[in-house]
Amino acid sequence: MAEAVFQDQIRKMDLIDFWEVESAALLSYHVGNDPEPRATATLQKAGITDYSHIARKVNVKLNKQLKAEIIKTDIKGRML
Image (cartoon, rainbow, N blue to C red):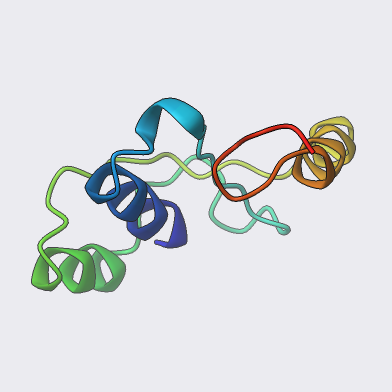
């Protein structure tokens, strides 16, 4: 759900070319599933109707890479 909201916000701020948004879970419980219906309904009430997602678990290697990327960029995606 956070992925959908963040994508919507960067699209509205015309920053879509500066960000790559992904979402992953810490636990395996929902891996392979579509978004939970209550989350989808909440997004639709907020006007976010084009979100699709298949749950996946965080990969340790990816997590380390993401931490490094977050540290190196500011909110507009510029290198620090």
